[in-house]
Each structure stands twice: as C-alpha cells, then as structure tokens.
Image 1 (cartoon, rainbow, N blue to C red):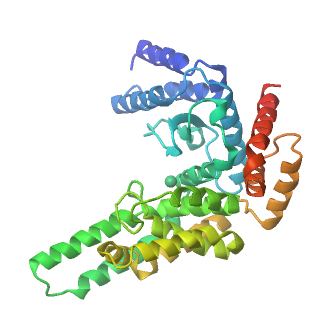
Image 2 (image 1 turned 45 degrees about the vertical axis):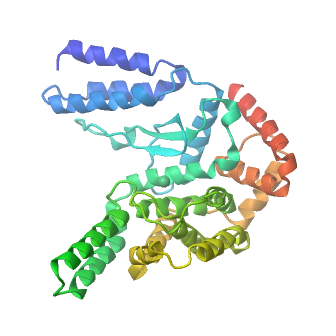
Length: 374
Ligand SMILES: [Zn+2]
C-alpha cells in the first residue's frame, strides 16, 4: 500500500470522525491505518469495509442525546468491568431500535484487542426527547452481547456438549427409519442446532444470556421492559422461527431466573402473560414443535450457564437494597450518579405514579443535560 493511499484513508477517517466527541474513536482508527500491513491487500480491503460500516451508521453532527448516551454507555461499561475486559470504544448510533453491532474487524500487525471498535444502536433518534432512562435496562442486554463477545468460548462448553448428546440420542432413536422419516429427523436436528448453537447468528443461547445479564444488573427494571414488549404481542408465542427466541420460552426463563434472583414479587404481570398464552394456544402443532426444541433440559442449562457467567465475572447484581438506594436518589436527584441507579430510579418513580412520572423524567433529563454541558 502506497504512502499516498494510506494518506487518503486517513483523510477520509478524519472527515468521518470530525466531531470533537469522536476524538477517541478517530485516534483508534488512525492508529489502525498505521498498523495496516502494506504487503497484505486483504487487510486493506477488510479495513476499508470496516470504515464503510461506520460511514453508514455514524451520526454526522452528534447532539445532546449522543453525549447522554456516551455517558450512560461508558458508566455502564465501568460498572461491568470487574473480570471481563470490555471495549472502551463502543460508539452510540441510532437505527431506531436497540441493537448490538460488532463490525467485521480487520486483523492488524501488533494487534491490541482492547482497541477494537463496536457499536450500540439506541432507540429513537439523536434527540433529547427520545431519551428515556426507563427503557435503558435494554442497554445492559446489548452490553450482554458485548460481554459474550469478550468471553472465552469455552464458557459455552456445557451447552455445546449437551447439544451434541441430544443430537446423537435423537439419531439413535430411529435406526431403521425410512428415507423420508430420516429427512424429517435431520431437518429438525438442523433447526435445533441452528437455534441453540452460540456460533449461529442471532441464536437463542446468547439472547437468553443477554436477558439474564440485564436482569442480574437491573432487576425489576428489566422485568418491566420485557413485559412491555411481550404483553403487546399478538402472535403465537410458541411459534418457532430460527432467529428469534419464542416469547413463550423467553418468559418461562425470565420467570425462573426472576425467582432465583429474589424478584418473585415482581413477576405477577409475566405470570399473567404466560397463563394467558397457554390458554390461548392450547394444543396447536406449534406447541409440539416448541416441545421438541426445548427438550433435554437445554433451556435450564443455558439459564444456569448465564447465571454462572454473571457470578464468575462478578457482574454487579441488583438487589433490594439497590432498589432502596435508587428510590432515595430518585426522590431528590442532585446529580446523575450511575447508569444502573438512573435506570432503577426511573423504574421506582414509574411504578410509584405514572401520572407524575413524565414530569420527574423531564426534570432529571434537564439536570443530566446541564451537568454534561457544564
Ligand atoms: Zn439481543
């Protein structure tokens, strides 16, 4: 790669990350250009693709909300980093919904993994009016995906071993099956593996782990967020599609995890949903397919793995005393102290009175915004 081509890349990056709030990301990208290996055109192509990803997603002129989200993000990362090293370079962007983004990363000479850039899409747009701390337990779900990215893949060993055994057992069950039956079995197994394998895109295993991480860190605030989504759902919650965790399974595991983390008294609304779904979707074919997909205790094993990840990495656990101190803070907030307290405080105020919540929220957001500008 010629010096001129390298220089051109640098100019494009300087332009892309022009805004002052992008300082740290700009320096990582420029540093990466210096590490590009001139003798490997593949690395240069990969780098250019990487840059294109950011060209598509970055907010060009970030506003106040962007600064709020940067703060929420970096504070949340600092609360999570006890044993697992997370990236300091997760950039907020706005695609209208919560989304974790791990762009294809080029490889460099002298790679320093901690300098990789990731992204999280926040709901709404880069407007202060779209900032709602009540929904930010989803931020912990998205960071859950990032934690999984940073963990050694052997944390999944119990899950993958169990999957292998289940698949072998299934094959042995029909030793002399006809060709059409064998085809059905092998297709079902393929779906099973695609859904649960932590390596497949949008698999159920990493979704469940991310849910549990958010529940672990945000407690009842996350239970509300989950309920907010599922109670509006009008489809069949037992229906399989390979990319999305069926709502019936998601709720079943949230109820189990909620109980084991001491939040039983906040589970009524989810129990209600669960009961309703079972009545409405009595014995449809989708229920049989559902039963086949959750066989062999795999969901409970994934749940256990999730809780082990939280415990072994010393993720900060939300407890009833966190709720009490968030209540104290929310009753007379003088400054924004931490992301989890902000989320939990918003939840406390919301549960207390929906009528006065909006007023509380806008006051605290003003306080936050002014604080960041000072
Ligand atoms: Zn997710």
